Image 1 (cartoon, helix red, strand yellow):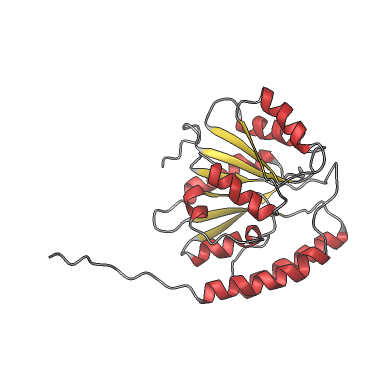
Image 2 (image 1 turned 45 degrees about the horizontal axis):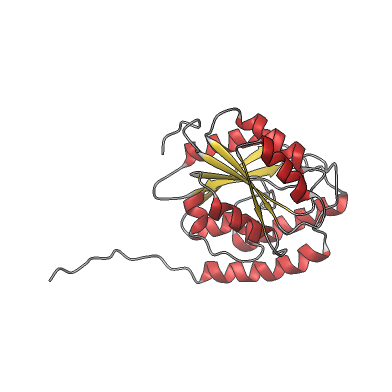
Length: 250
């Protein structure tokens, strides 16, 4: 893999979305503006069984944007399941993820991609994580996120100040070797480190939500997050290092 970010289909932008009809057209336009012309990238929107006009909006966008691919879940399965579906279908070497609400800025994607290319190591995979240094959320969401990040960092030692940021870049091959489970998207740095990799954080822009409502609140993040934290801690504790293997001839 070279550092030429214009090589054919170098990366795939994967965007899980649920009931984001008011945000998705602008978001796709911004991804295209950041990626530029050419066929070195694709955009994969995974509609997690939206009940609004998200699918109809995506169909209209697909008619005019050849780089756009649309996947649709028959049933709502959550953000991690949508992310897994998108990465599995992706054709790019690198994966860039964005939330579908438009709060992540696609203009930050090239910098994270460049960082991933410069940090890549054949022996140690890397995940580059966005760090929202200036959150544009309500006080309650900022506080809950700060507490969650502090608890997660202390428990998992993932050295990542903002694991909840939806803007991340990693190699597709790396993601496909990770354990896949509900809410895994919140623990990507720890999961990559579990397999001997590294997590690197880069400051990114964060924007207010313009349309729709957040799908997450304190109630459906705090308690589930605590349960998930125990599960990921168990996975890390149970890891083992592979031994050198020698095949014995006849």
